[in-house]
Length: 403
Image 1 (spheres, rainbow, N blue to C red):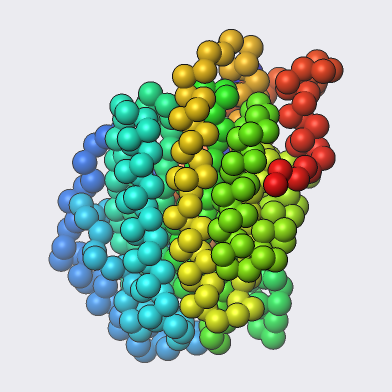
Image 2 (image 1 turned 135 degrees about the vertical axis):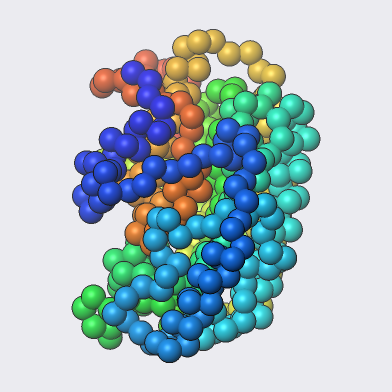
């Protein structure tokens, strides 16, 4: 059985615990995927909304807890032809490290451009289309999506800057220590926050080319609490040990430049985090993953995140170049689609970014960009013993060391 990602999400949205009934969620627009131009901003209306938001924030103060700011909501995104030079504004959101917010946004903007440029060159056919949006009282984002390429069926690189307040359960979904972050808050009290991040998923055509995901983010919450999170991971349908040695070896070198303890710790963290618990297997073959990182000078952690995101192409690009023209059978393609089904299961059930976006009124097209266009589920499927499919299934069930 093969289902589109959109249909699968509609089913999941109705059945998943805690999701609002599908009828209450406005239909998401996908102009970026259709290649249509962004709608023109109605400037006067937006300026009135902006002024109202600023006045409300000024009169209510940053400590207001009885209602979310106006920027939280499924229909709060205002499409624009081009994003402002910076989506970070001093004074917006909870008090915090405003220079770090601006520097992190600048860094991931540059990374978004360099990564998408490199992927376009490898693909040789398709180009990324960009959607930009803003919210009335701060923040916004830019989604770059490539589809129908020679190498990639779908690839997306999303940047977002978000101000607002979130339910405590959203904070718990967003971070490893979510319960601690909300300690001392009254039941029902919302948590003011700032978040800035760059996320990406790339789904290649060839079954011997792995899917790749990364996410690098910087968070602040009320009271001066801050942390970095993120990582890069790889999801092959077929095991090539040389590819895994290259990918993991690249990120071990990145980690070692900053702290020799980072790679073993963050590799093990990825193996633990990317588990599809109801399948007792991992989504892929890991990489690095970290969260709640605030155990040293933020400048040092900023440099680590910068090094890691700028190593995406060196870690992933050569693997794609090596296999993008490999011959494959229809049976191998069907196996790739079944593994994509597992990818969908993890993202809709366990992924923190997806849950956080859904609970804080994020932009649906950007949140669900990670899903492949097609995936497959086959009832009670088991690979033939001794087959390449069985080999990688063993790696999904028993974590291996690659370097």
